[in-house]
Image (cartoon, chains in turn yellow, orange):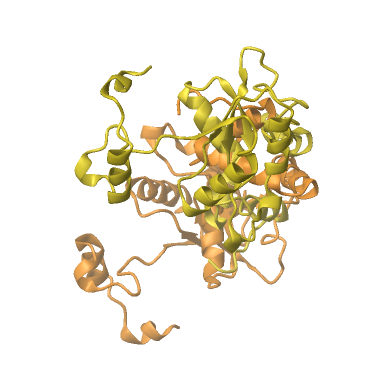
Length: 208
Length: 208
């Protein structure tokens, strides 16, 4: 299917637009376009407009850089949240992952990536400066570094640690160890080794 | 990921809209939405509007029921096409498949499906009436039935054959046989059996 011949320019346009989306090829794009043709005009209008609206109206929260409908996101403006606890994550997606655990009551800071010289991402491309300002303003007791456990994530952890270590703030990272539900024989050596070194008192196992 | 918490209502809307598309779940929808956020506003506007335009402006060709930008589709309005040859297909997608072979110079007739009592599709749901009218108007020398080689396709073939057999028009179907590039040992028995019964003169092998 190199040169597809569409009977309609409008269809061709829609297929081309759909196939710009990640993971969508021409065949899937055609399937999506034909699907929309079968929907009623009102719901297709809603679909199209919700995308345009998303792009035009969504902003980044001025405190945590999370996606938000207002200047201050729902999490930062929630008075029941613990504003002295900041969880540092790579992306908006990671905020959702942590939120879904329902175990965290603090606020966030979205870095916008991790330091990765290979991809041309340096510290100045991230929102570390803003994080430092938040810490400098006071009222922050703990920073939880929740980045990927990759080399890039660890580099970024270390960089942030160096910039914040002189402030009167506790810096912690996520616990690393064997996943819950894993069989030991399938756990990788490095994780297993680390989880022996960082073994926990058995009482802690039941939660604090 | 049962109850996803989005920090933005706009994002949530876009994700919900994307996940209505066939084959798109919440995770893919989120990925698509975040992708759009990284594009410039103008191209997102184009994307959204191309979908709305598609739904509002595309029509079905008054002759062949193919998708079209105008009352008469590009194929039907092309004077270099052989208008006495009508290829009957199930869907718009099949028109594209036949067009892509670049072997066909006639026109089409899109049925809109095949007869399938299981799915509640009867002859009256298809455009057989219109096809009969096209044949009745004359100027048609041959009808090529290019439907799926399934039971539903064969039923539909037979139904159309019965309705058209009294008109002075040749009715043919696609050749069935071993696929080109297939090894005989993997060809299914029915196809192989048919291809022996309907064996062709060797000269025909080189094209007519």
